[in-house]
Amino acid sequence: MSEPYHQLLDATIQHLKDLKARGTRFVAVAPETVKALTQPVPLAGNPAAPARSLPPARPATASPVPRPITAAQTPPASLPNVATPAAPISPAPQAVPAPSSLAALTPADKTAAIENLRGRVLACVTCQHLASTRQKVVFGVGNINADLMFVGEAPGADEDRVGEPFVGAAGQLLTRIIQTMGLSRETVYIANILKCRPNTPPGTSGNRKPTPEEMNTCVPYLQEQIDLIRPKVIVALGATATEGLLNRSGISRLRGTWQAYRGIPLMPTFHPAYLLYRDDPGEKRRLWEDMLQVMEKLGMPISTKQRGYFLK
Ligand code: URA
Image 1: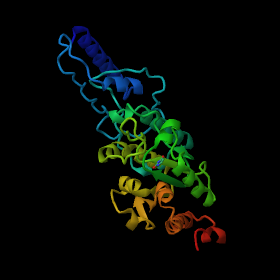
Image 2: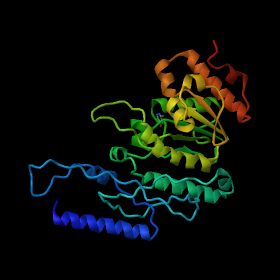
Image 3: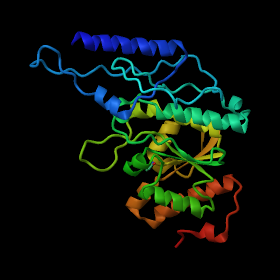
Image 4: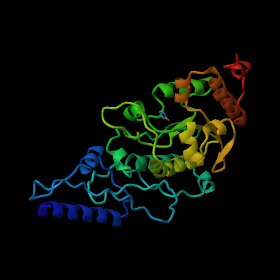
């Protein structure tokens, strides 16, 4: 490859090293830049030579020592876009402190810690194939002091476009379920196992299930989010959410049975998309019974009308 290319590469690497030495843990890289970096580079001087893909980015340079989250850590809002083919620094999910140390956070510190996490998640390019195809990172939405948190699988096309979880058809059903419980999207918190849309071949529609690697990469962010929000109950929507949080498969067997995620009661239930697909009153009733259990656990009032939904 050409000399100027190597000079640029060395300069970029040096710049990133300088940033790292000054304490910068991540840099924002625009999705277009990541996409461009994953394109094959023709070898200079030999147009006939096969193109070579740039090496994959190394994941982050985060400290191996778990670092407590402090409000003083600022989101990456003002960092420049820096591109390097060798080492785009991405924020590897950090190990989180024990939940008890987070319980003492003041409301302001909690808000700052969530915004710090949002900043790191929005800048994440660890899964390059997702970073280069996503339109928006879907961090999560709702009340960060919610008692109830719903966790789904991953953004679909609508969520990817809007940047908010559960806004498509399945999302509209989830919103109705939440409202039928006497709550609203604003009073609960909603997030996903994956914060980026799983990419699908160009020209195809539909979604694909996240891979184990993608889940392993992204779940630590969700874990940090849950540790900060500290809901009283988590609802895992569907098989992928249940697998991602509990590392257990078998949603038909697990649904309706109380589990625990880091000490928080967790109710696995069906994914709303499954109910749209099945359109079976029996399955709707089963999901609703799971939600009645959740309402009981949270000490919410339950009317006779609410108890009777989807009964023949
Ligand atoms: N399905 C999910 O699991 N999550 C979303 O955000 C949307 C659809």
